[in-house]
Structure formats: structure tokens, C-alpha cells
Image 1 (tube, rainbow, N blue to C red):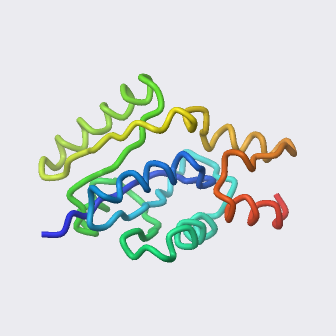
Image 2 (cartoon, one colour):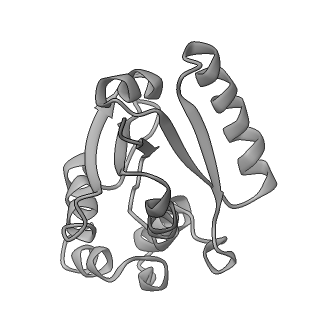
Image 3 (cartoon, one colour):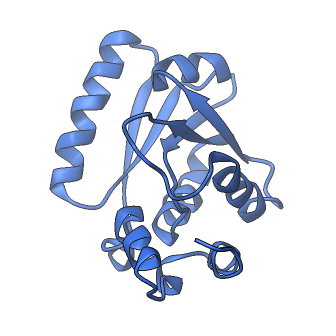
Length: 159
């Protein structure tokens, strides 16, 4: 049985912190699906299609990583793609408290799907999509927080 993992999030935009978690999780799984969740409570800066394009470009040379867009419960999408694991990145203790609550709810809904937490590299602790979007909206340079391809793409499109 293949070890398929879902890494869910908004990835708005994809940051170096996201890439760090994906890259360090690759040895643990046969396949990582980076799931761009559509959340009606959030107003994203970038379209789901743009975020999917970034994921696919960043990992175009690694067939173990693929992007996908999904709507609804993460646990349901795991079942759809055959994922037995959910990957979550943790930067701070507060992240863990929030993520553990979600993991507990997911485990209640389906005990066969396990959540795996990876802590981010210390150098990426301050990298959050919310902060990056704020920098971009206010005309700042978000390049230090973004993969080169993402930064280049953002610099060439109107915001």
C-alpha cells in the first residue's frame, strides 16, 4: 500500500516555509498531494489556479509531489485521493494547539487517517502567508520569504 499524504492549506502564496515542510516530508511518504483548500471564510489574494501552478512548477521534476484544489472537509478529500496521512507544519506552540484540535476532530471522523506534524526550520518561523500578503499589498519586497519562481511570478503580475 502506497504512503500517500495530504498537505492541506491555502498556500496564498506558497512560501519558503511551505517548501521546507514538503521537502523534509518527502522521505517519509511515497506521494505528497499539496491540497489547496477552498475556504469561503477567507479572501485569498491569488487564485486557486495560480497557487496550483506554483506548486506544480516548484515540483515539476519530482513526481512524488502534486498539487490539487479541493473543497469541503479535508478528511473527505483524503478518502478521495487515498491519503492515509495529513501533514501539518508547526511554527509555534500556538500552531500546535490549533492543529491538534483539528487532528483530534479528523481522527474522530476517520481513525485510519493520521496527522503528522513537522516543525519548521527556525529560519522560516517568521514566514507566514498572512505576513507575506501584507508585505505585497503594501508594496514591500516579499522575496526573502518566497521561492524564486513564486517571487518572480508575483513581481510580473499586477496585484
